[in-house]
Image 1 (cartoon, helix red, strand yellow):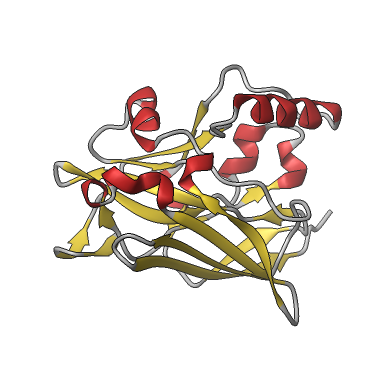
Image 2 (image 1 turned 180 degrees about the vertical axis):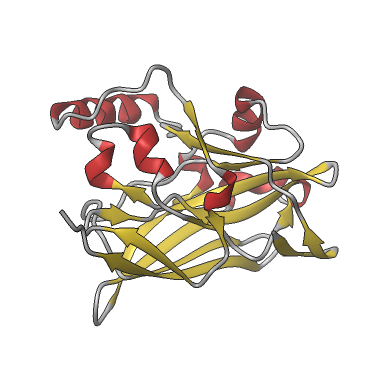
Length: 217
């Protein structure tokens, strides 16, 4: 994949993709969410955090993805890529099939494309103020943009911890977890996401549309 970086355009061959789940820094809140999901049939994770594997072909920089059925949704996440002997920070959406999630979380993550930003920053440039970085996701379902997610990386386990625990190696990319959805998880036809650095006064962006394919029985 081709990325824009402060060092210029970089071609990065991503061999392995990890989706980190249950990465909230507040363990009590994570446990409460696990209990909520268990009540509707979603099996609890075998450990916290949990690192799912998905196909590297799911990563996309296309402006539109196609999904099957009406029960999928995206979520804004920091993206880490280990390449060129360093770790890069980007932005991604862990688009997931919510109906399949009740059957198998791992399967639900495998069936949808994962949009990623064109831009990357060297992680070392923001390492001393990671918790101040702000994630925003707005969604549109027809005629109006609404705020869907908002918060800082302080709500997610430290990225350095996730790097170590996951064993992130050269050629790996990892989606690092997300924030709670405002007014609940729901589908949308368009997503507009950003990761803002208030210290260095810059932002990464990710926008994509969703086309829903019919389920033919």
